[in-house]
Length: 553
Image (tube, rainbow, N blue to C red):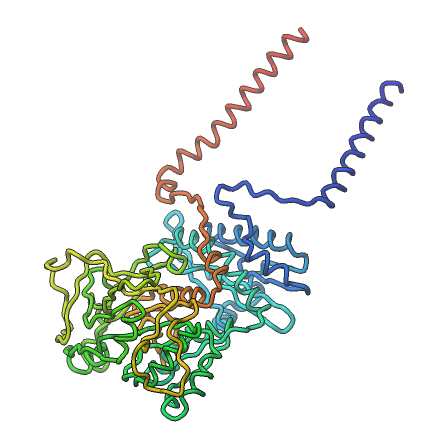
């Protein structure tokens, strides 16, 4: 009994210690992120969003079931991120579900696709056997009667499955925080979309406007009333923080220019999407592969020159080109052939600003070069053509043909095509006769900013069967370009919503196994994983036997 009593005392002290430690841990709770890239450290933007959740919120992640090995990583990273969210806010509940479990796969896939939850078909080969699986890389966030869909998989141009997972994991925190932000958002900023002067039709920019409507009030605006009510038009335009001018094709009158100029002088921001040259693929296709590229005078040259840029009446011929599809034959014999098209460059970002950081390729069409001028305004070149590009003057004939293989004239390259301007601008009508005398003009602006892009088609989405499809998606090649994300970044920056820009640019590093090497050396590593543990156990056994024999002999 004397020997047993100390053991009971020790056991009792251990139990008391554990209870005390558990009690302290509940009061002083802390999680530690020991990863190199701080993958599980939530950004201040996310923490701010989570702090606003004051009622139960449910997140359903459709990543459960027979998930291929490479996409298992996406599932694990999603789980760990949501655990961090839940640790910061106890109102958050989440669960992983298999949307096809207990249901007819064909009917459920069709139903979910109709709801916008497009499945991903995975074809995998293991030991010579091919199998197909449907994966739903989606999450649904429900708050009361509101819902937001979250795409977990980010498409990347020309990326392998492993690279897609890498990009998707980098995008996870932004995707979930952005969806939560939209559920909680009370919109207060307004965007005017110019609908005069021959700008793009609503259906041609529908996808981008639909995306931005989740964050901002968006309304069409026309300058047609300037001729009769210039003061009222300026007052109405000044109610908007940003004006988007998407590919105008008709000249601006001096009175319209003065209203736009005074809008900028009063702190308004403008996203200029302009084509200095009139040419289109549609005209070329209708005219048997020939068309003329003509300079397009929008009467904005002096205005932009005063602000610090000049759009040139040229076309950039770029060897970092994308393809266009050309129909050959007629009727049921029609075949579509991809043609390399030097006037449709793929712009690769230089990652030198929040707006263009970590972007994939951006596709432009008949883009012109931009010159920057010295006038005291801060300028940042956001996009340039490739090092292998050249300027071609207009007017010129554009012919549908394969590009020449000569590299003559491509020595210079890197021509600016998108420029950010920030600072205090001078009015274009300073020390000039004003077209509208009744407007009280300002000669200098309050600090403001604008972005000038020399391609109006950067915002135009394709249309399939009368419906707009996602901006940046090429329906012929199934490739995704980052036009939409780039323009969203532009709008966010112009409206000073930079917190989500930083979150969108978050980078993480993932380690993946080399599949080819793994298959090639699988037998070797299987043998190693079997022999080494057995050898170690045998060694420990022999040592133990030797020690016992020596001690008790």
